[in-house]
Amino acid sequence: MNGDDDRSAAADAAMERYADGDDGAFDELYDLLAPPLYRALLRQTRDAERAEDLVQQTMLQLHLTRGRFQRGSSVFPWAFALARRKLVDEIRAARRRPALVPLPGEGEDLAQEGGAIDDAVDARRTLGSVAAAFQHSGIRSLEFT
Image (cartoon, rainbow, N blue to C red):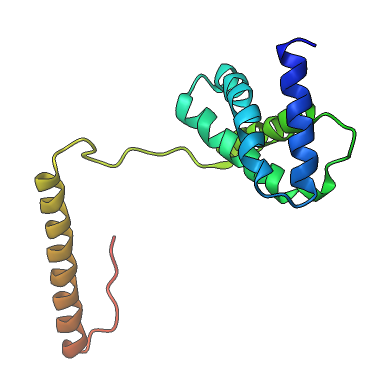
């Protein structure tokens, strides 16, 4: 047996114990699965933080579905399939998210942005005062042309 075969056999044994309810086997399983999952996801995403998040999501999914693990199967292909599905789900979700549109004045310092907020509050107060004045004068509507 070579190193990969030993690692695969150890991971399979740990997964079977984990599926049987041995929670302590998770640490061993994580140590065996996380590094190759991370390397594969890093190659796909080219983003270390994103790859790390996907590994965590994959391991959570493995935990949640451990009762469905088929004895005698290899855990590595199953874990990589879970990781691939997590990556595809993330890509699809990103496509559904609307693009962020920069706000006017984006990049200005907070003092300037605070001033813009103050201006907006003042304008709303002024509009409220004008509306109250019209209400008291009996004017029912305004027409803007």
